[in-house]
Every structure is written in C-alpha cells, then in structure tokens.
Image (cartoon, rainbow, N blue to C red; front, side, top):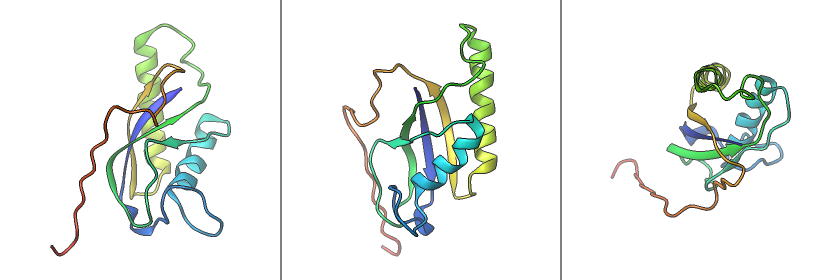
Length: 125
C-alpha cells in the first residue's frame, strides 16, 4: 500500500469521484497511474472534493505491486519511489502534482484520521 500527497487546482474538475462524461480528479490520477505501475489501481482520498475545489495536500492511498520494492534496501526503495513521483508528475496535467509517495502498512487507512485541516479562501474577499 502506498500513501501520497496531491496538490491540485480544481478549476476544471467536477470533484473527486468518477462521473460519466465529466473530468474528475480520480479519473485523471488513476488513468495516469495505471500505465506507470502496469496494473489497474483504485486511488482512495482522505476526503472527496466538490467541483472546482483546490488542495495543497490531499492525502491519497493506492495498492500496487512495484518491482524494486521487494527488497529491504532503503536506498533502492527511495530511488524507486522518487522515480515514480517524477514519472507521474510528467504524465499528470499541470494542475495536478503528486508529492511524497511512501510505502505504508496494509493497515493504513487514509479515511481513518485523527484530524483534518480545511482552509477556505473565497476569491475577491
């Protein structure tokens, strides 16, 4: 299981969850991730977003099997995850960035948090 932070400008997205005939963040992230890891991946966010909402640090999780991470060598793991971040950032649209991909335990659940921080900014106020 992997954990990562997403930063995105939500102006052109119709929220997080896939919807027919709408561009969503889940669709964009999963569709970019699938060919990189070579398998179908379901990305789960710490919380869904509404249409037009942006985020600086939306935490997500996904399950995948990556070659190079079957070793106990921390240096290999770090290089593999850094390469994954670079490749994803090159594939994702410019208004979506991925940061800090980490391996986490199978017991990690992005929806189970002790706290969340929301900061609302209203343009023009």
